[in-house]
Length: 154
Image 1 (cartoon, rainbow, N blue to C red):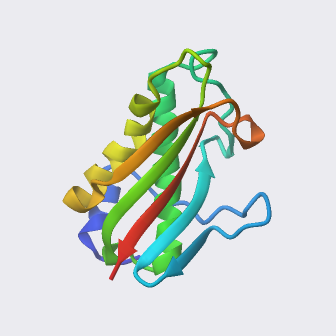
Image 2 (image 1 turned 30 degrees about the horizontal axis):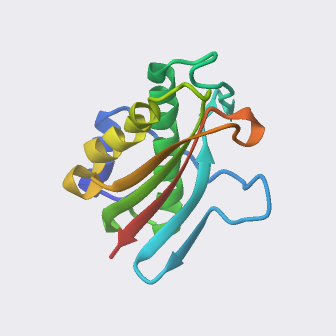
């Protein structure tokens, strides 16, 4: 692993990057075009299995925020595999977050903060990004949250 300050931050936060997950359907985990890397959606996992739940029904915003943070760690693992060194990341450009939630749950933005705050903690100003956070009726495998990412690299 690189000696980039990014890895020092991850170590200080007690984060070990996971390997790239095997896609569950007909897609690839990432695609790079020019200086942009597009990461496919990653679902929340707990103990290596889909983190199943619905916000507003059997999960609250704090639990959802923890799930989004866990996804951010998985996304960084995939980004590391895509570019070989997180020190090459010039900017986290955009996140799109899908939150499995009831029709009356309105805190998707707070759930997604779990990922957004971790990217800012790890990448500093380069971790600030544009984003969308949607409430959806269901996510594959019943997962509570799914997030995709676009990053710019050197």
